[in-house]
Length: 364
Image (cartoon, rainbow, N blue to C red; front, top):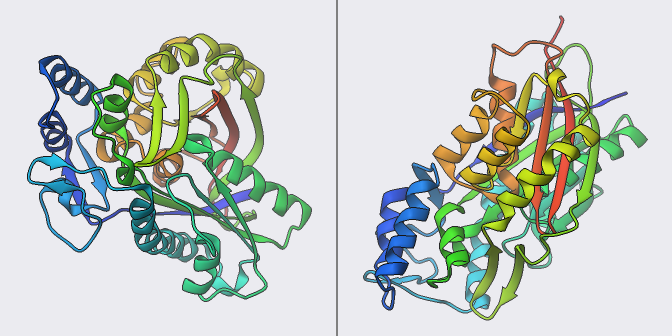
């Protein structure tokens, strides 16, 4: 029996902020000379992002009891412990909200869940998000729990792969996959180009999926196959490390160039004939990455429209982003039964994760 994504739920923090607002705030930091301010303007304006959601209302000019990250127009640099405390406070409700939405659309009751797989790279604590989901959703104390941490933007695909293998081994299994990332907690007030690029794209959000054996009565996305590849170069170009003042992202201009150079051979190897693909779910690490993938695979402009739209509305929410794209593909009624979907995501390493999915519509 093929494992199927029965439903996808998403959740976003209440604070929605315009890209231009974040651009102006970041450019106003003390010590940023005119060159740095020009780099900020160029990076934020070229990101193809209109709005992002963040767990810190202060970034949008609001107030609250959350982590202090702003004094007037000056961004503060809280220690890592304080940032992680905020993650511990705000991540579990988003995990739960997205998961409740996924369960509600799955046709399965919470007590039917047998496994929970949580994903995050923007905070850590124990007992962790997997434990809190079992408690917050009132799941059975016997639910098996797994947590995938620090895999970065590519992590949704390994999580779905794990869920598919669980269901393949036990056709009665019902697996909840939940990804939550709070990237805004780790803003770095640095004029280094890598930090400017990171600040221009990353955002907060949560996505969840219920995976179980599929049948003809419930629509979804069949998980047909997976593959992973490590590219020989790029280890120093995309990295995510723990610093004294938050987690520090390295994201150099080499990343889209490496992906653009390597993706054609990788896609042919792990996906097969790309002319047979009806829809694409490509993680929008940034506009330039989507541009490079589109060009390298000779895709038409409409192919990556779902990825670009999620990027435009929400920014790069790391691992959760791919679930937003798959949610929109599943909800698109113009796509019929049997449509073939290719998913690609990129993570530190440089790692490429791929999945082949088939859209299923109910026949009765």
